[in-house]
Image (cartoon, rainbow, N blue to C red; front, side, top):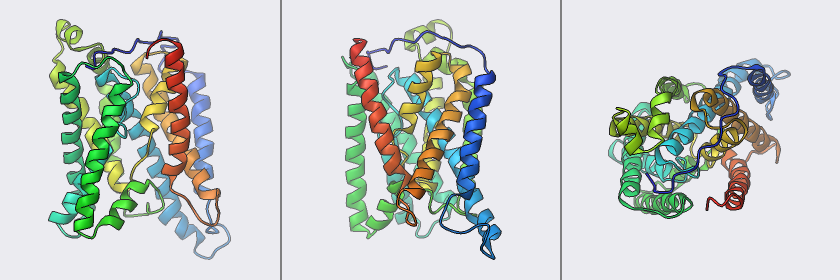
Length: 330
């Protein structure tokens, strides 16, 4: 789609399940257990400790699993459809469009329920992603690095519009909270819509082979009998739903969808179907580790998880750029 097709890496492991994945599950399981018991509130000693455990800690840990897997797999799908390893929802403006949709919903429907806000964010995220794809299909770019730059510029424009609208409607504080990217507000009754992303994960597993063929380009996909435009539309819909739901509940999780698919691809090659469990698992592991760090780094206070993710993601992003440069792909 971009005119700078990224060279597929050789497949090194084709098995869907193996002992290394089980070790990964055990490591992530330890992180999730730690997430349940890390925090300022004394879960064990306080009189209402276990009540708070089920009101705050359990929903927060479930949200970490769902949001981490959803954003990592959304990044993988977007990289396939654009044939570019440097794109994901936060570098293509999709997250900013979801925020604008959330703001528009709040203006049109004062105090809307969570489900209505989610629908508004998903619709705007879908529109924004289609605009980005339409731009890429009409412009030939010589470098794969230009694609995320275009996306970041588009996201900056949309973010500026959101800021202006928020200023005019006294919603600037709400906008800042939405884009902070934090699991602090995830409690019982405020996160359940995230279960929708389970359907997204299942759908990506089901259409993994078709997404792989679509990732080879429109000409090849059409020649083998695949309806390329329909697959792009389906992939865009899956990305928009995952991004919209996560933005409404958690906020911005920068670089997660960028670094996870690239790390898995460097280690295991480009076998999409066998990589999917690893992408989901690594996404959960990274976001959980960053969330634990965000809780303990200035204890008893807490920083947004997006701050830790931004630092980690930026370092990995630069490392990927240098790696691609040494390989002569830039």
